[in-house]
Amino acid sequence: MTTGFHLSRYEGLLAEAYDAEQAWIDDVELYAELAAEHGGEVLELGCGTGRVLIPLAEKGLRVTGLDNSEAMLRICRSKLAALPGEVGDRVTLLYGDMRFFRLNPDFRRGGSLGPDILGPTGVSSPCLDGGFGLAFISCNTFLHLIEESDARLTLQSARLHLADEGVFAIHNRVPNLNEMKESDGKVIVYEHYHPARDTVLRTRVTATCDFDRCLERDVMVVEELDGDTVLRKEAAASVTTYYTVERMRALLETSGFDVIAKYGSVERDTLTPDSAEAVFVCRKTRC
Image (cartoon, rainbow, N blue to C red; front, side):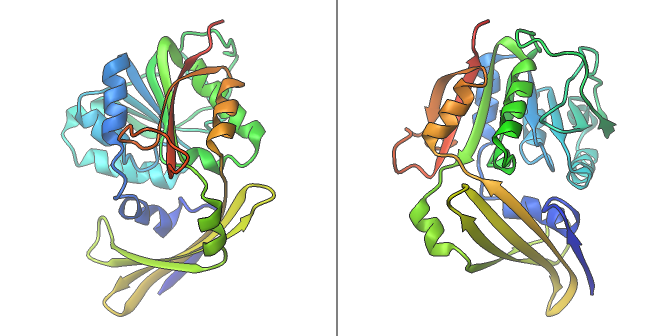
């Protein structure tokens, strides 16, 4: 048996387990519909293994994906390599930090599946027409930005890359404090089949909450099993934050966005006080 500990839950065996753990999320149609409604190319921040990005490309959309985990991008590239070439030709994958990235107008290279590294450039005008018809952050990825200053930097970077009539969408869970208190410190165990191997992945997650600081600390241990034999065992710790609907809306509006729609699910259900998730669709505040 091999063992390991990672500083991020998006490395090693934990990255391999990601697609199986997220298989229940049915959000691709939301982003496909938004792209069809608003036109232009698509930018996904925190694209990971391509769980959303690849189906969008299969639907004929040109998609750029940015992520700061090379392990997750490696899985995405492998999945794309198994698909018809025209799908990969519609995808550009980039390694970078969603807080600080700046894409120059000539960055787009069809089929750019290598580990391109991005950093800040001199492009900083908040009134820039960035060209993307849709930019989005899916399924709680934004919650890894535990400092509000980092959250604002990310929103401002996304804003810079939108076309004048483009939209930005973000999907987060809504905290249920009673449920969080009930599960605080308890171990949750679940199993999935490995997405690419004939093995089983057993995941143990222990979450502890700091309610004063709106933080959740998770320790995740993943084992790969072949029958009763443990082949690999790897662990990671992560910290995420959480936003009430009111706090998220205020953050968006003070970061240069106008909220044009909000939903209680990726199926565009009405957002209510009992909603477990929230989707915001925004446009750039006019300069």
